[in-house]
Length: 258
Image (cartoon, rainbow, N blue to C red; front, side, top):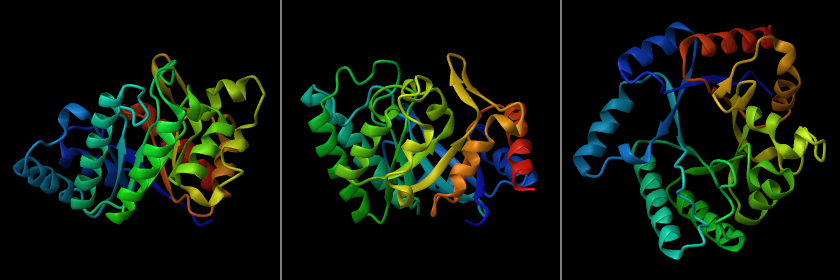
C-alpha cells in the first residue's frame, strides 16, 4: 500500500491552535471525537460546529464516537432505542459536515457487554450501517480491549453479519485477553476481512491510565507491518491526547517509513 495519511485527535480545544500544531508536525488529518454531552442540539449549534470544522482546512477530517454506556444492543429496549436515536443523529450531523467515515464502538469498558443482547446488536448495527450508507457515510466498527470486539472471532462475526467497515486499534488488540492468552494471534483481527479496514489507531497499548506511546519502533513494528497489508487502511490516527506522547509516537512511526 502507499504511505497512509497520519492524523491526530482533536485534543486541543482551540481549533486554530489544533490546526497549527497538526500542520507544523506534518499531520494530514484530524480524527474528530464527539462527546455525547457536547453534541449540538439545534440548527444553530450544528452551523457553529460546521464553521469550526471548516477552519481545519486543508486538513482532512474523519469522525469518532466513543459514547460510554450508549449501546445499540442494550438489553433494555428503551436504552437501545435512545442509543439508535443518538447514533442516527450523529450520522446526519457528520453527513452535514461533509464527513465520509465515522467509527463507533459496541461495548465500552470492562464487562460492558454483560448487559447487551447479541441478536439486538447485530440487527441494530446492521440497520445503522444501512442508514449511514444512505447518507454516503461509511460506518466503521472498532475493536476494543474488552468485550465482544476484543475477541477476533466475534469481531469477525459482527463485521460479516452487520456489514460495517472496520477500524483496527493496535493498542486494544495488543492487550486483548484473546491475544495475551495466545488463544488468538493479533493478525486474526484482520485476516477474515482485510478489505474492510479503513482506519487504524496507533499507540503501544492501553492500561488503566490511558494510551501508552511506544518507546521504540520494535514495540509496534510488527503491527505496523500488518497494517500495510490492509489494502484500503490509509488513515492512521496517532491516538494520544498529550503533546509529548503524541510526538514520541510520531517519531516512531516516521522511523518505520524511512
